[in-house]
Image (tube, rainbow, N blue to C red):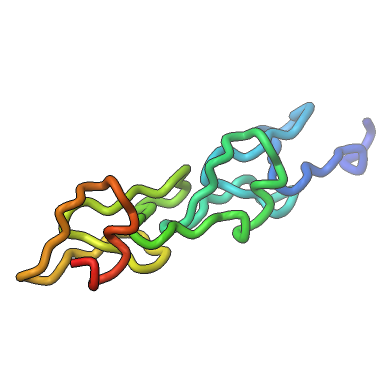
Length: 123
């Protein structure tokens, strides 16, 4: 091993944790790595990846990040899943949070059924 040319690039979806690593590690849930040199990047709020360091092919680009369904949200970057909106709130698109129903309207379901929180019409 006489030069950097002897080093092998990590495949997309994996990273080397430190200089001198003997292998690459698959990114954890909510993260992806598109190039050998990028390390893992968190999916943006409103998106998620559930796989936790098992399958590199599920972590290869930002396109690997899955949009939250209507009625759910992933408030933080690097989420492993989406959460159903709480009572009185809805989320109509992949979004980083839920919106409160306007005054005079309500939703009684509390984080149980996403389909009951999909739009302002749900209020």
